[in-house]
Length: 452
Image (cartoon, rainbow, N blue to C red):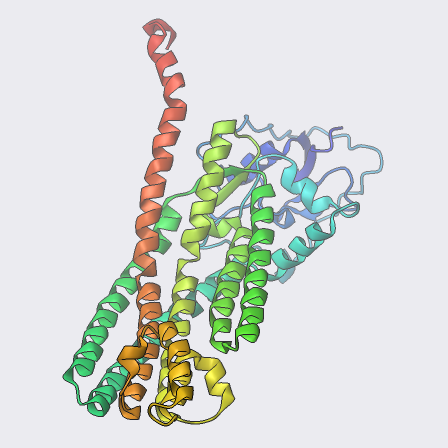
């Protein structure tokens, strides 16, 4: 008996052996029910068909692009001889909540199923496996599709409510700087930035919903699970390296604010790794029955969909980063001239400008520090010469708020950018798919009509 052959019990009758693809088609047609028992060589006992990973999907159908073989007929009244060592068939499946299988709703992503023995072989591997395989299995068990969906909702809400908070903080800061600097320009800048955030917040909400719809509307096949697993490891490693590198750089330069982009990169990379471990959330069907061109296009589609799926999380993380920088601008405004080293580490150049303002006008020490901090803050020594402490306070706070504004605008525009880029890239994939099928179409045109 082949290691991929399955036996199953249907309405009290044993049937088999059938291949993995036949078993999947029987399940999709409703002939094999979730409560029916299945067994294959190497298993200690018969198990419910619902426990076979990926056998029953949300739609109960085989991937349309695949052409599965005809299912094996179920014998009626014919005894099936099981291999030596096969366990006895239980009298009936155990009743109770454990035997009840909940069908997924149509809106839920179908679990990935390989119409071959690959997924079963991977689920049966118990020894001689790489340590990273065990790590991936543990991560996959804890980070389920439900976890992915909940994380997406959480960071989307964080982005939306964070933009509301940013609107309030930016409008108030613009008014304060206008009063302190006796300039209408700061107030107008604050109102203009408020209008930009209002528009971007609305656009982001609309396009985040479109991203979810586009994800469901573009199912794709891909070969095996090597690419998702390796991509997950690379994303997790990249996020960890970014966090450590920026943390060490922040400690070396005395700029603790550099930790914020490190944390943002770590969260986004970690989420991409979790998504890669759950290809069902991308509406990706894993199959080994694919030609080389189909495999290449499927792998490209997987990478594009992972990036698009991470857009809501990147949106929320970016908004949180921008709001944090905006709060630091308020801290700078309220603690101007404070000798606290912690604030200087957090705000860097802005706090150095605060220390410059406290120096006696025209002193050598002040001139040297102006030359050191001015270019880093975007100002020249000539621009800082003769500036009062109040004016310098406004300039430094405005500089910090401007940096926060750039981060907020980039994060709020991310959903529409991700949606547009995915559409363009997917259009390119369709063109490549059409070119790959062109030789077969030409061959069909060359055939005589009576042979078509």
